[in-house]
Length: 275
Image: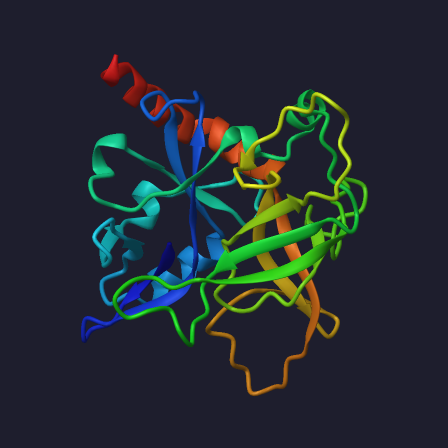
């Protein structure tokens, strides 16, 4: 899904990427849906929209897309820590309709307790993939995403904040404007040796299973000595060299955002209504 703004002539201008997660339960009828993106993407979209909204461009099951207008102040919730560039909104189940919504279930989150329970490990050098917006070709009839690939270069450490301000993973990959808000997926291929009896979430394949985990969300990248948020609007007349190191908001911070405060209350209210 792409996040952006609507111009006065009616055209959609993309600013970044967003993705859905499903929290709680294994069935389609007992989980709660949330949408995640980077907060600076919402800021750019709201600031450039002709009437101050944040537009979501979502594919449908019919091969086209719909534009959904949201209010940043009313619908979106930021992380309580200003150093975490993440925002989320609760998505009511009765508003899914014909939207082609695909989710990351919380069982795929690369959280400490889940990794331990599944005997899984996330390590330096693991392959990561992140699908997202390529602004020069986002699709006419429907959203068309590209996928970039990299490797985990450094895992987040509370004692070693990136740039002195950010709790983040670093991945060796060229993040570009438009990929802010993209999910970062760790993939353990068929050559990865895991202990017998590992419980793992997989994409079925005829010959082997591919294990995937949600590591976090793309936030930005390093250019020269600077740490910058991925943006389509940065143009200060100076050359900017992407160093090939991207910053990733860890899934632990996304989990905090989704399970505390107003979002959790909205999800619980909907569950009560469905009972």
